[in-house]
Structure formats: C-alpha cells, structure tokens
Image (cartoon, rainbow, N blue to C red):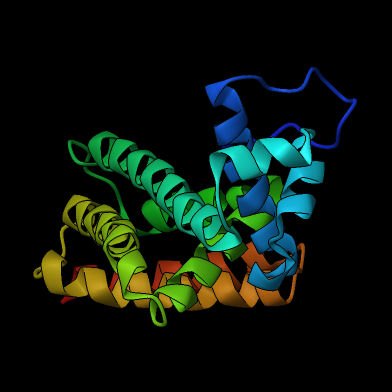
Length: 206
C-alpha cells in the first residue's frame, strides 16, 4: 500500500533529478518512524535513500526543512489513501461486525507491511504541537480519519455518525498505539477486532 524509498545504496539504481527529492523524503519518513526525529540527519537520509550527501544538501538546506517536507508528503499520501477508502465505503451498507473486521484487518495489515509509516505519522502529530507550521498538514490527516469513520458509521446506520466519528477515531488511535508499542501477532484477532465489533455494534444500536 505504501511505497518505500528503495533501501540502501547498491540495491537498485540511485534516483536522479526530482526523483531524488522524493527519495530523500521517503527515506526521512522511514528514519523518523524507525528511530525518531533525532535520527534525521543529512548523512543518515542520504545513506537510507542510496544517494550522495551532496544531493540532500542540494534539495534541502537543513534537516528541519527535510522534516517539514516529509510531514507534508506523508500526510498528503495518507489523506489520499483515506479519501479513496471513504469513496469505497460511502455507497455501501454493512453490518457493524463486518465493518469492524474489515477495518481491523486493514489497520493490522498496514502495520505489518510498513510499521515505520504509522509510527512516523504519530511523531509528526507530536511535533506539530511544538511547530505550528506543521499543524495544517496534520489537521488534514486527522480530518480524513474523521471522514472515513463517519462514512463507516453511516454505512452501519448510527444515529449521529458525525459525533460518533470522534469516538471511533479516538479508540482506533489508542488501539494503534497499543499495537505499535507492543507488537503482538494475536493483537488484531484478540484485541482490536473484538473491541471494534463491540464499539460499532453499540453505536449502531443507539
């Protein structure tokens, strides 16, 4: 579902031109998700992207600029992905338990496929509390989550999907943090799925 920067140098041809800029930003997202914002240096990003150090300084004058642009890229891509899910879910009518299973499986698959990506997004949210210039990008990401939750709640027939969406996003965020902090192969089946099934069933019954 997510693209990566291509890994270490030598595994494939180094990107050129504008592709280098994107490779730098994707490498930055990976580093932030794996090691935190403090790991973000020009040298570390260059090594992860498989490009020369001079390429990173050509495109970005500071690591702060890399961070800001990485936030923008990751948030835009996540918003686009969530909007596609909204469009897929909006015309459907589903049972609460079915949507819970579907959403739980999708979230767990995202973490399994690229665990650094969701960690990086939470790092971006925290950093936005300290850097106001990041808040618009993060706000769009949060709004997209609310829209997806609202679409799902309308699909299962809740009485107040707009308000209930905030409940769903809060619960999902907590579950995701639990999964990321304590990886467990049984978490999706034993914790996330039954929690969401109970939540959606209760909301639909009100």
